[in-house]
Picture 1 (cartoon, rainbow, N blue to C red):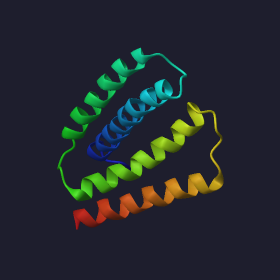
Picture 2: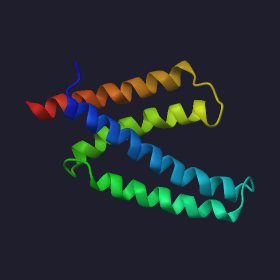
Picture 3: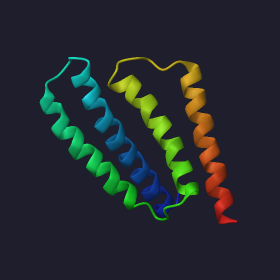
Picture 4: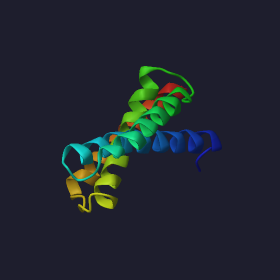
Amino acid sequence: MLSISFAKTLGLFALTAFAEILGCYLPMLWLQGKGSVWLLLPAVVSLTAFVWLLSLHPIASGRVYAAYGAVYIATAIIWLWGVDGVTPRWTDLLGAGLALSGAAVIAVGART
């Protein structure tokens, strides 16, 4: 069973990853000519939220950021499917699973 603290951290990681991906996705749309320059405004808001959310992580250390990186990878695969409409391949899912497994090893190792 997940502890409340772990669930909160995982949720914060997912929200941080979403803000980062959105903040990078909107300028890409504008650069590809698929949206107006006004997309840069919510992109700035999203990247500002990303930086703020990153500052809320319990401990600013390489270990925490490594675990965040795994959640970012998984969130990017979900984005690929939900926003870009590309069905993830089994290798995408395996890669995200391996990254999350690695993050779990890091998290468990940090507690001992």
